[in-house]
Each structure stands twice: as structure tokens, then as C-alpha cells.
Length: 203
Image 1 (tube, one colour):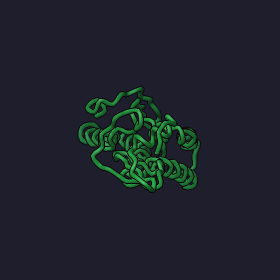
Image 2 (spheres, one colour; image 1 turned 90 degrees about the vertical axis):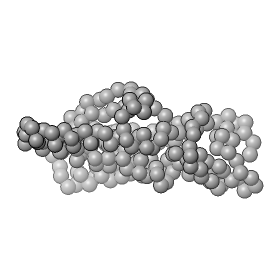
Image 3 (cartoon, helix red, strand yellow; image 1 turned 120 degrees about the vertical axis):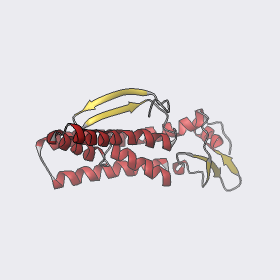
Image 4 (cartoon, helix red, strand yellow; image 1 turned 45 degrees about the vertical axis):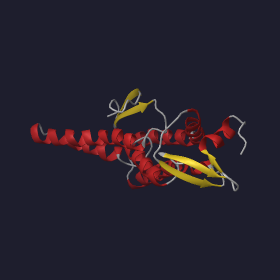
């Protein structure tokens, strides 16, 4: 699916609980594309379990695959469950809020897992994803700036439009083009981003 939509794959990392595909792509690529690429992983795993159950059947392998699938769908960054949550949030609220909520939900889910069940193997796995969540939290401001900079330097086409009052960049959404109202007149997205990054724009 990534090849179909021409997403640049930077690397694939093999982990005890599955594989993590790292893309070198714009944040502002369509949510539809990201969703279809994301969902292929869990769907492939489900198909694998069904085929194996019908033709080979190994209970241990099936149980292990189901465990990986369930764990991978948990809303913890960088698992697929967190990415799915982030995509759904981006459909209804701003990019900035979506990212922060995904991080907070990741922290809460980790705490819930450790409270419900605790063993050494689980602790090692959770420690790995916890570090990833911390790093993502620390990168939040840089990620938001990258989101804005992409919108300024590249020409994306979005069918849907949104008007934002008070010139608040934090309300910008993925898959939308924006118009800002400064109390006197309407300003384009490019104009307000030029003011932020070039310090030449006059609103």
C-alpha cells in the first residue's frame, strides 16, 4: 500500500512484538493514504492467522500472533493503535491537539497495563515503548513546526476549507486549507505562515 501511494520507506525495524516501518514523508500527506497504509499491517496479520488455522494449525503460533495483534492495536506510541487513534483525532480536531492527546493516552495506557499485569518480559517491552513516548513528547514542538513549515514551503491541495479566528495556528487541521480572520480582514494560510517563518508578512 505504501508503494501504491509512493510513500518513501526509510527503514523497517524488527521488534519482538512485530515490525515498525519508518517513513520519510510529509506530515501533510492525506489522512486516507495514511489510514490505508496503517491498516494493512493488522489486516495482513489477521489473514495470516486465518490461513494458518485452516491449513497448518499451530496453537502456540496462533496464540503468539493474536497476542502481537492485540498489543499492536493498543493506543501506545509507536504502535499501530496509537497511529489509528491519531488519524481519527485528526479528522475532528487540530493537528496539535491530536498529537498531544495521542501522547497522553499512550502514557495512561502504559500505566494501566503495569497496574493490571506485571512481569519482567512485559516490563522490558513497556520500557521500550515508554522511552519512545517520552521522545515523541519532547519532539512535539518540533513536529508542530515541521507541520507548519511544510504548509509554507510546499503546495498541498485540500478540498475542504476552514476559517480560523484570532490567527491561532494551533487550530490548523490536516486535510484542510485555512483562512484566518484578524478582526479586520481575511488572511490566507500562506500569508500568516510567511509572517511566522520569513518575518516579512504584514497582516
